[in-house]
Image 1: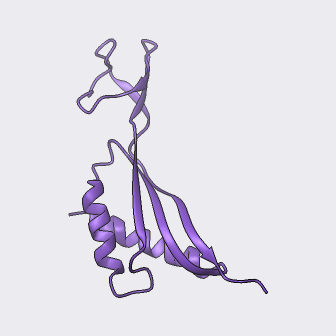
Image 2 (image 1 turned 60 degrees about the vertical axis):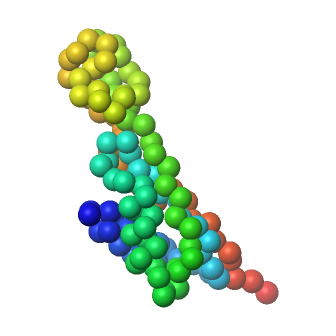
Image 3 (image 1 turned 60 degrees about the horizontal axis):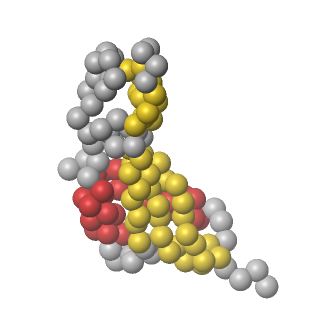
Length: 116
């Protein structure tokens, strides 16, 4: 289950980010996962919960947004792909994948420390 490794890296990045800012409490983490990233959102959330249990991020909500795979083909097709589109849905040729394979931390919802 590679989702555990991905969740571990997300926690490490979030920890570095939060420690360098005046954050009182982390509320949620939003992650964008490409349609073709081969990541199960539920397993990613479960792994995140397991890793953060008993630590400073316990109870933090992980939100996972799936981004569609977008491709461009020489035939002129440019658009979203279906789950089973291994070739261009318009001409049957090979396409250039523009997006949909990445994983990115999109947003951290935090409560800031009082500045008074």
